[in-house]
Amino acid sequence: MTLHQFIVDRPDTRLDVFLAGNLPEISRAAIQQCIRQGFITVDGHLMKPSYRVQTGECILVESLPEERHPVLDPENIPLEILFEDDALAVINKPAGLTVHPGVGAHSHTLVNALRYHFNALSDLNGAVRPGIVHRLDRDTSGVMVVAKTNAAHHDLARQFQDRTVNKKYRGLTWGRWKESAGHIDGPIKRKRSDPTSFWVDASGKPASTSFQVLELLEIFSLMEFKPRTGRTHQIRVHAAFRHHPIVGDEKYDGSIHRLQGYLPEVQLPLKKILKPLKRHFLHAAELSFIHPFTGNPATFIAPLPNDLADILDQIRQVMAYE
Image (cartoon, rainbow, N blue to C red; front, side, top):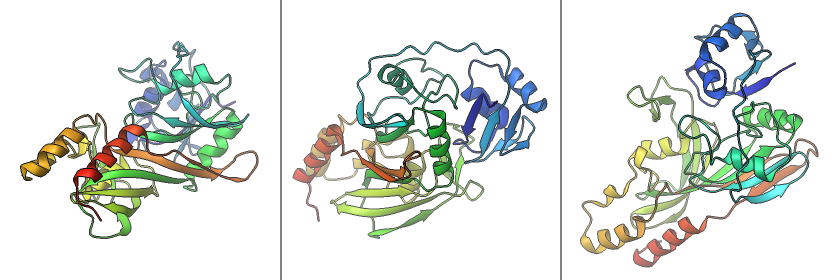
């Protein structure tokens, strides 16, 4: 009987380190022992604890020492539920909400909210990530699907692994893109100097993002991004790689400092508009997949949230745009 199933979303990480991050209630030494004893497989194969996992690989955990499940208290955090049935729920995640507990975040996460709003959640990803099939960055808002049963979770995870799930994001970037549409193909790798950051590097994992310009403003572009792969921070890294970082993305050079050098009549009103923006301007606007039980195509849309929509409207009022 499988105790846990994980689909790798953090590539180039040691197997034991990846599992320790997903099973914080189990010591790394205990996880290493289980790997050596053959109770943990990667895509059906036995691996060493030092094996570096790859995106999309399926890790099955058949046995673990007695687990000390952390207490994940239900919290009445407001959630916008776009759809719900017996198999799954689709939510519009607000910005500023971490998806699941981790280092420095043991409460007030999406998982705590899910436990409050739903009586049943899948447990394939363990007690710390009930229902979680995929993730959005803490400061990215938008559509997420949550599994309520293990069967639904398994099917949805397969769709993500097979890259048949279609995702559309809205983002405001710095600068005017020369191409109206195109693709960014750039392998992504974790930075050695900062393990929380990523960059395009020839030795990284393949990553592909389609883009389309929705609206050109004087020094900004409103974009639609469609990630074909699912690397961590992929859209943010690819946008910065093309020298058009996401507005408000301080990690990838998209902060308000980029207004330096502009004339005061441009710089001052834009600083006033952008200063209240406390996150990057990126929103998961649409998610499409095949419903795991009915077999029917399903598409869910979340409009641009008020904080981003208001800032965009203000920019339009003070800038000449096409």
